[in-house]
Length: 395
Ligand SMILES: Cc1ncc(COP(=O)(O)O)c(C=O)c1O
Image 1 (cartoon, rainbow, N blue to C red):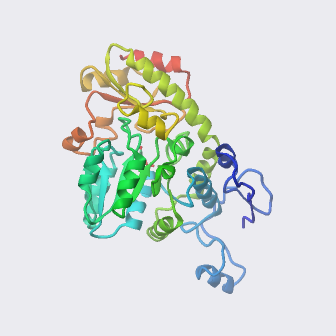
Image 2 (image 1 turned 90 degrees about the vertical axis):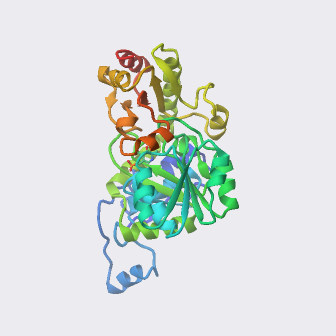
């Protein structure tokens, strides 16, 4: 069993936490965090097993409940988000569904930004609805719309900021205030900026949700998710994960744990390239509009910069024309990866209307402003000139 941890981390900086927080060392005294690839743990005798199951002594039981590698990942991510606790899950969607199913009940109501990852819509509109949880969708930038959507049964406000793919910004502090006034929790999907650039709980959010599949892994290898927040809330989400089973595999947790060590370096480098690419795209004659909150022309630029010093690596742009012109850009690509994933060191490009947002209705796509001429690029670590040359082929 892991028996030694880094306890001297009071008041150290983010970079130090990223490589040392949560570290547990086994009796082998390894320096790099170990991968405990085991589904279960053994006991010295029957009485020890009984004590562990009765929660009378600490210790690991079974990897659906807890695992040392998973614990390291959770504790490190919680330290970086500045929250008391974190529970890891198998995917980002598992993190969102576990937060909802762990904290809400039949008759409860959610107010959600309509600019969220496409799959959140069928999750809330179809699956959660069947369990008696209703959702109202609002424009993420319109605080009056959030206020107007509140019902006596509202228990959760949910948003993603910046949003994917349109880089719309939610005012986290203002939403936290609205949530508090009505006794609801604010949950923020922090997938696009990560704690390296934005820590929603510092602005009053109650829960931070991650698809760790994206920048936390950072190299497109594994699926993973996490929910961070106060211990009393995370304990309830943990209760759902432990029982319903969307637990993370120790291997995926280990990949993400090591990903956290380079997260800030990658986020800063990829954000700078995204900013340079956004400025360059704005100057291209075949492009009608670029969506990136780092641009001074973005309508919420000031708010965005108040919440994060850099605006991440995801940008989108509208070509002049429609689907044919957008697909022409993708089809002329020779290097950039044509894939709907984001958060990789390799730059990716996708047509949201026919990929990430294909499963929602045309009306929902229109409300979310996902047009046929929209393309999304998630900038990786390649040379910016190489990305420009590749995009120019079809522009
Ligand atoms: C912002 C955001 N949240 C959540 C998810 C869902 O994550 P996962 O694919 O790990 O389930 C995604 C996936 O692309 C995403 O972009």
